[in-house]
Length: 569
Image (cartoon, rainbow, N blue to C red; front, side, top):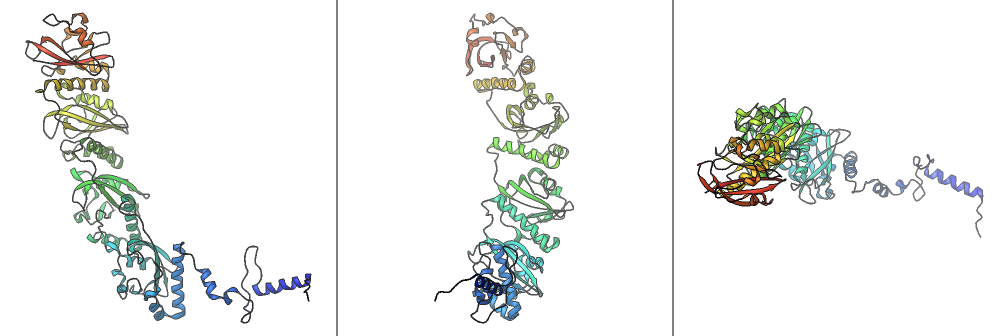
């Protein structure tokens, strides 16, 4: 017999379903569960299948933070339902370990009661539960735990990978006990030193938040806290509070934490630190190698203290003088940014700031020398007073070529390491209205190699022209001071007339008169010199001896002018 479905039967069925499920809530929600029916009857899903309901409440492992909280909640629930002894028996058994998750429990005296991943810790105080480098993990986790639950991150052994990894633990204080568990992630490796350094400092600040200043400072003054080249230093109240690699610095002002050549690294680090964190690079002793290397420190100001750490790299060496010079100038500019003009100028006027042949010179926007440790007599004087041998206007040239990107300029100057006049290659950077420079020396051609010396002499004349322009270059080479024994520079203009010569009788002279004492007209050979240069020979009086000698002149066409000098035999 076929059942007849009527409107009344449909309504009755709907009412029955509502009675079983409970009153319907707002759209999209379910109201409170209805009462359970007898065994085998329709009722709340949880009463029919508690295991299914529990499984549905378990967060997925791909959400490790929520899964960790679930593990801790389950431990507290077990404690409530089964008591302490049964709970400890369960969580001290290897079977309670769920991949990377296990539960640890401390009592009210901060003694470890359960730790299935490392049973040797059971019965020991929290102070003996330490991570890599003796990091006081146990003290920190019991210190931060509260009734609402707290996270704490540190490094610890992952029982799945057996590797040291970053661990994020959730701890809840409940009924005088601390229940905790955590999840792992690989975290930055030392192969990414910048990220590793920042994480290292973050852990120091986290420890400070957890256990307080005294305990954090005490830990970071221990040798165990040093991780190869990484260690944490802490400043407070103008003094160093923690510095495990140089304990003698503890309690002393930041100004005494200096790098090679008394570079004021400590002052700079304290000056640049802020709440967001800042990098500062300088030279310092690497505790792992014992050598002075380039150090890149990350410093964070937090709660009135400064926390910092850094990583090292070899950096340019003096055997690569160009790169070493550029790094030397970069450190000067970095110091200026950190501690300001006055302190930077004061440092670079000290003898300690000189590094062999390297020293920093600084000129202001008016081209006045502010710092020059190798020649203090130049300080306060205009750039025009900083001259090389034969009054070569080196100071005017270096300030003229300096720009924001940096420029090289080569000239002769006294090497403070040897005391001799040598070829100097200076790197100058215009920055914040100042000119910062330094340079390295090499011997260059000697007068005993007359052809090479002559060519270098002409190159310096062209470099001066590029730096200070035609008028100043011509003015200099018209002075008797520009003569170097038998060497002097003469300059010929686009029309063939001499515009620079130490002997006024030759200036403006008719080009047709370039005839030597033998009657040889050498003018065409001279004026025909290309940009690559040409040797031209003729007989003239040697200004050094007053005798007529064969002269070998090197002439170079540059920017429409002819620059030349020569030597006699």
